[in-house]
Length: 108
Length: 116
Image (cartoon, helix red, strand yellow):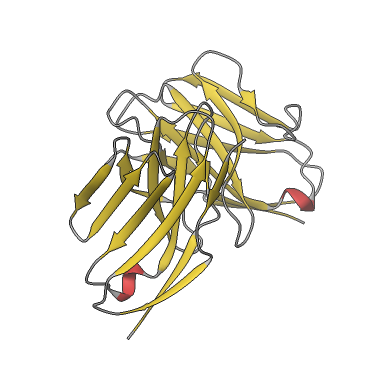
């Protein structure tokens, strides 16, 4: 079956760095996605990993280890607007399966 | 990035009525569209996958006669909630995927359905 785990909530300070972890077990693997979702809005695409290693895109980076079934999303220079839920999603032999999301609160 | 629109953005209806939600990919051809439902503070739950010109594939537990999906063209999919009841009140989100790499799903803005 499919299982995706990520922490429920995290709090970090403005300007700091935060790492959101995601572990998964899936049937097959075609890629891992990170999405940002603000309350009451649809998710927006942040990053995609299909090979092991780090993908950097501005203040956001995402890492993947397929052998460990592990990924993390790294957010640098946190801003108040980064307060949102961050969803880890994996595509295996089925369409995207989403984790329950990590609610990040950025405080001054 | 790719643009996906949904209409309406919110709807309130009486119990027993049917509601149609449209999902359009505005700047790319969507070979596959997905419909999700999200209850408050919960994750997105996939309801069905539809490919243009073919029948939708429904996830286990989703009634295909209640949630009618039509994917008539490469840019339009519709979800009709038939005989809606209060327990169908939720946030319905569509996503579309085309040929562009990395084969990413792009989400519409969502439709908030409230059934009275």
